[in-house]
Length: 472
Image (cartoon, rainbow, N blue to C red; front, top):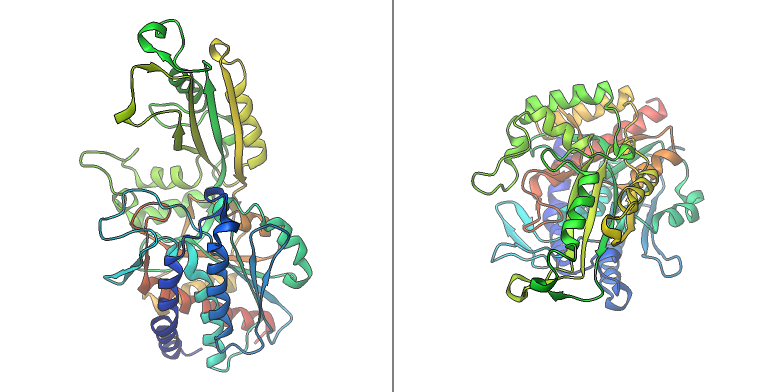
């Protein structure tokens, strides 16, 4: 593969075709079903899928078939098949559903308002990970433009990843014969430690989440009359959370959410810390004077990738400050998001979490934990020598620096699912979610130069995969 020609082709496609489509994609508020119960009626997801389908059909990729697959009332899947010159298959993955709006966007930005600024495309879903489909198909097209052979490629784009990929197992089962037995899986839904080299994800944390609801009264009453007699639902809830988390350190106490860190992952964290240094924590928008949980970058990397951590992502039963009267409230509820070490079983952890929170309710309060989503994490298999060499060469060719390896704190349920289904497959999990890109939060952006270089890297990996699998 000619590096300069690949760069030229990818640059031309991104500037002339991909970016205009991503601008239109960002305008579509196709929130994941977990955040838009009326997604069918709104039709935004169908708009996003139609936009992606039309773009794919217009690309100069020989032999390609594009199909929108629908199973009952589940979210749709875009299934693309490209025949190749070898018997092996490669599976490339991404998603089109988005996180909700989130507050705190810069005054001139917004989740559904695409803005180009300083080589960044702002707006919800461009980096997480609407670009993945466009980059994946362009990588294949770049090979064909140079007359280079490649393996059979299947591109699978789902629409409920941000809801825990709840529809995906049924699609994988239904499409099993058509997917085949991929020996290489490429996923562009992950992150990068910086924008200066190719980052390969070695693990993904799992996730369990749900609603914790505490009720002490059937209705609110005057706080002067009830306080000291009626236990505060907030205080009861606070005590329940102390069963799960040590407030002073954030340490998780649930046994089902703990796991040993493999020695190789510890060594990779140490090497990544040497590259990232203080940017491990400095990339986050801390308030003036606020501090990270540690100053040791190795500890922070391991906290983020191999240790459980709790986030409270929503609350109910609490009126706005402007409407908060002197009332002992009847109910307090919070949404829990518990990240799990990659090797923890999410179902077992969810069951353990429910037992921990619901048993022996203080004051006999009515306590419910309603599990809402769950996903087991993933620990990558050892890299084959050919893939390790290919990643290093690709990073040097298109970034000018060596490849780097790091676990990610997020969850991609599809990867664990595929790892269980195809235990002999190699995995390239990577992405563009780097410093301040802020997926799920305000001011999300796609770093365009990194996305272009990553597209080139995927093309090179596909090229070298064919050479390796065919013995060239």
